[in-house]
Image: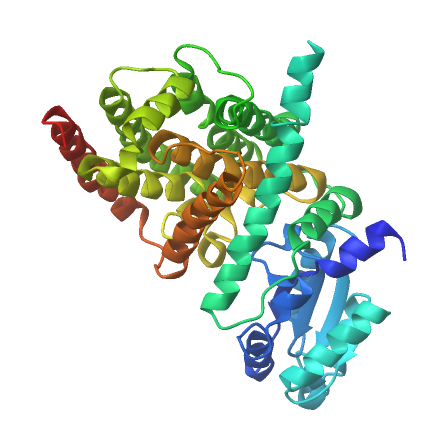
Length: 136
Length: 310
């Protein structure tokens, strides 16, 4: 592993994009930052601006309105950026998959690096997904 | 010439101050983690962050903005911070004595990073950055007068010495200024000024993360953002060091005194971190009135106390 890659993997800053979510995944993502799970020990921080982000966390079903915003966010992000789809809705569409306004799961819109399924995924599952992403 | 360049670039300027400052920034995050009952980041985390931003990430320029100014501002922030660091650390580490009136020069140089953040934010053309920039401007206008009063009080207390080296020497004779009533008051006021200068909670309105999404830094990415981080690391070391030089007898590097010097710096940073972790962000109006009314009042009380010899 080169020095650049090592530094990148040691300091992933997260940006959270919630689509048309039921908020369960949002809460589980926030759980990862709490004292019990504490992702800051891997150097991860939740940042407020997409310009600082290294990982784009996407959860919730993506409907027609979210689609353009998600694309815009992905284009505004400084590369390299990793995209993680969280929850059943983010990975496949879940129960919204046949809905009228559904605009396709995340990987039809932007390239996805890791999938974390579950409705909602436990914080342990999210951490396991992050570890897999780091070892990729 | 070569000597000046060495002072500026390596020791005690850019490189030395940045490395110590990066360590202190890790210490700040670790203490924050302990306050939250978390484990916290590894010790090299600031270096990983810096090199990631510098080497890996792409730099994005704003479409509707002044691109040259946007890119130049972080470089000037690093220059300002490191030249202030040189003037502070040369007398403090006992390398050279400095010159007459350098306290006033240091006072002006310490505002350069904040000013360049404002310029960079306004050049980015982002409305949230403009909000952050205007807040930083209001914050500077409120705390600078207080900081100047603190420095004036210390100059008055030392018997009208306006060189940083003489201020430290005066404390070696009479004992640290922080040992008197007026000194304690000035120390409290100066701690709050430093808190505002470093833009830590409760005075982090310019870069409020949850409210205006990092405000003045919102458009920065990649190398310019790494420069801003570097300037922040340097400021995180030199401001506590300046405070220790002004009020707490300076640093001493002979024998066991090294330990005492290190503990002094760690204690000041610990105070800043604990204030940061136990307070909410106040409104900009509250911050301005806090400095303009209460802190100025305290500083003037300290000056009156010095006049009566306390």
